Length: 177
Ligand SMILES: Nc1nc2c(ncn2[C@@H]2O[C@H](COP(=O)(O)OP(=O)(O)OP(=O)(O)O)[C@@H](O)[C@H]2O)c(=O)[nH]1
Ligand SMILES: [Mg+2]
Image (cartoon, rainbow, N blue to C red; front, side, top):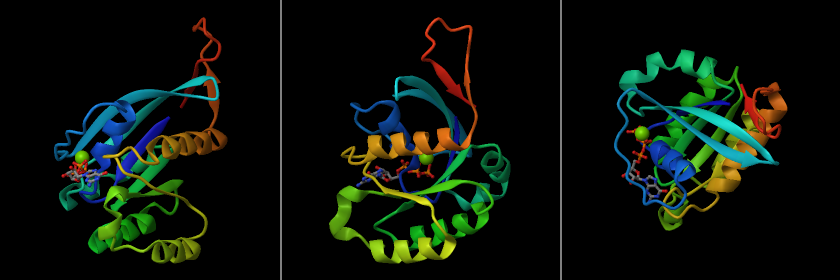
């Protein structure tokens, strides 16, 4: 399954680190251009391989990202719940990704007291653009991270073909392309 993470400097790499290594401390470094990360998740007795394009939040790379978005099963549009400018950038990505499936993710839920983007504002906007998946997570505490990933994978499995690779002894192994 191919994911593409976009959004400004809001915690995309940290979220991926949390998904890949649930028990390790987060050690993010600002991403230069685009990183490819691969990991797997067990879901409904299947092993799903995930390949994630982790895109830099710097505006300098925005023009390069169309082909990664186009070639992904799902784009994860991320934004920082504690910064209004991050939400404005997310709205830009929502407009740009409207032709493809996407999911919206609000980060830094652990800083709820500093929240600038109200849930009501987000939901109103989502109503205007039609139904999209929306999650709020904290990579720091791990809150909602696993649930969010499971829902993303389940939703993608419903939308794309699933191939069982016959070469594998374990017939429960599935690759979602
Ligand atoms: N409080 C809090 N801070 C976070 C969380 N996730 C990330 N951060 C902080 O947010 C900053 C950016 O994190 P990154 O994971 O590098 O963000 P990014 O979106 O990958 O950034 P770029 O690669 O530059 O686009 C770092 O200082 C992180 O420590 C979180 O869940 N809670
Ligand atoms: Mg990054």
